[in-house]
Image (cartoon, rainbow over all chains, first blue to last red; front, top):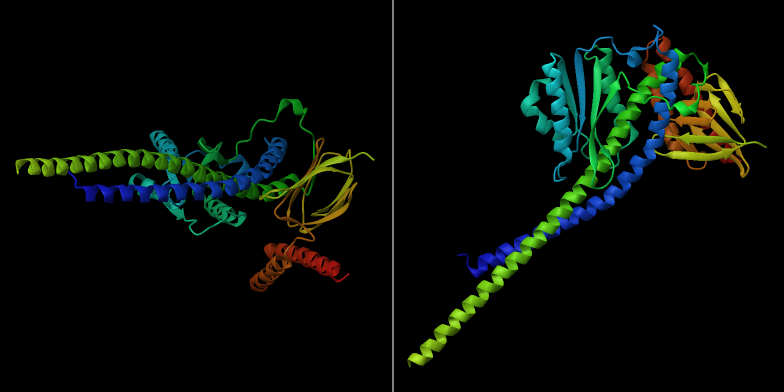
Length: 292
Length: 136
């Protein structure tokens, strides 16, 4: 049986752990607020962009001159999966749920005889994927040291994707990230970005207005499509940042609560043991005195 | 006067949303004014200064690229960067200008160079305007 000293040491270490998880929870909570505001502020842009682009795309659809970024390469052989995860762990199922979704998709595509390539954003995703897909991972973008996710980072990732697309390295590109719904609910999501899939236009908006374009549709699209790509990546990064903090907050909340439970049990055992020892010593003294 | 709904969004945030009388937008092929009841219209923007005429007074906003959409719901401007003239950091503009000047110096003549020079000119115009208002 453990000595009293051992138990004291163990109790102290559990308490220290609880302090750490508590602190991490509070840090995550304050970061979450900022990340959530940023994610929500970025939503209008991405939504408007999607709507406008959808309108223009439906006007251009069918014509042969539709740009490749919009219409795709016409093939469906090589898929690029862009897997966005966090740089750090200790955030519950956040990273593994994104990776699981990506892995299922990759396996399904491989089963259909298609080629899969992977671009990792964030170190954690790479760590988890490399065991199975070492050779298919083209590149890993690490965003360590980035405090506040800015448009520049998204632009950089989008440029990488575009450069590979222009080199005909893939036909279809899908983005994996975690959509921030609430602190306790983050939904791993797959979004196809090349060629883009638009939400069907709402019927009550009336007939799609015929726009006048300045300059021509093609020129506008040539400008708009790469921008749309960056915007979608940017949104994914922001949603991810908020989700990560949310997941970490609830994971650390659980950890703090578990530590509290452990402390309660350990304190009880410690006190019992201590009492038992005192009683034992008393008995020894009394029986010693009686023997005299 | 009838008003139209105007929204100005940058990737980071919703910069402006509300009812306005008129908006002057720096389009790629020249400035254009948008009043209520404007025909559906889509245009890309050049880096320049967007003026909002609202009941409370005028407001000038620097926009760097992006595009504008006029529909029955109003005017939506999606800008790469949007800051009011008072808030914008001139160093950002200056840095962009010097960066572009360096690239222009290195580039081979061609379509790309022409595009970049045009873009550089837009930035310089914005810069001049900003410095001009500062002096007054």
